[in-house]
Every structure is written in structure tokens, then in C-alpha cells.
Length: 123
Image (cartoon, rainbow, N blue to C red; front, side, top):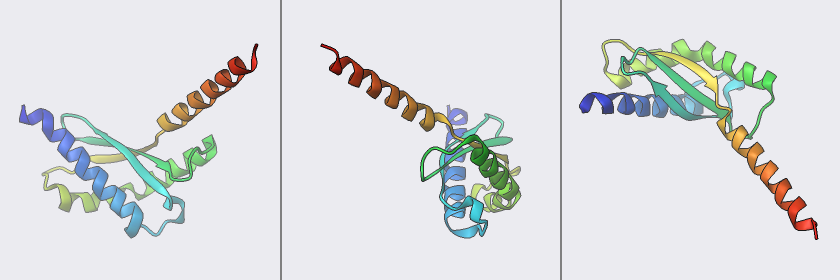
């Protein structure tokens, strides 16, 4: 039972550390305004997928790629800081992805709003 909780605890620690580092420690202007939405880590704790998005909201595909590239470029620096925080023998590899989930939710809300507007305007 403790083994199933361990990846969740490690993921939360990674999320906290990376969010703090993005807010304070990194000097890359491409990473300003990013927030960590979630971290997924396997049971073997070898790979952590960190999902980020901009505070400003939806970003186009080119911007998403630039954000991913900049964040993955900073991954080794972030990973070295994780070693101290986690206290594990092997620090997980960190890979960043842009979190498109909220963009999909926003689009669905927009479509539902259009449907409501159309149905209320019909007699």
C-alpha cells in the first residue's frame, strides 16, 4: 500500500520544487508566466512528466512548442535541484509537456455557450 502512495508523494514534491524554481530561480524569459498543472510519474520513479501552461491562457501551437523546448532545455538544471529535495538514489528524468487539457475545456464551454445562445433565440 505504501508503494502506491510513494509516486504520488514524489510527484507532489517535484511539482512544488519546479513551480518554485519557475517562479524564482530561472532567468529564462521564455519561462516567465508558466505554471505547473500536474506531474505524472511511473511506479519505478524513473521519468517524471511535468505538464505546464501559461498563466495568460491558451497558446497557439508554435508558442506551445517554444514553451516545451525552453522548459526541456532547463530540465537538467531543475533535475539537479530535485536531487536535494527528493532524497532518492536516482533522481527521475524530467520531461515537460504543454498541458492542453484546459484549452479543451475552454473550447467545450465556448461551444456549449453557443448552443445555449442558439436554442434561446429560437421561438
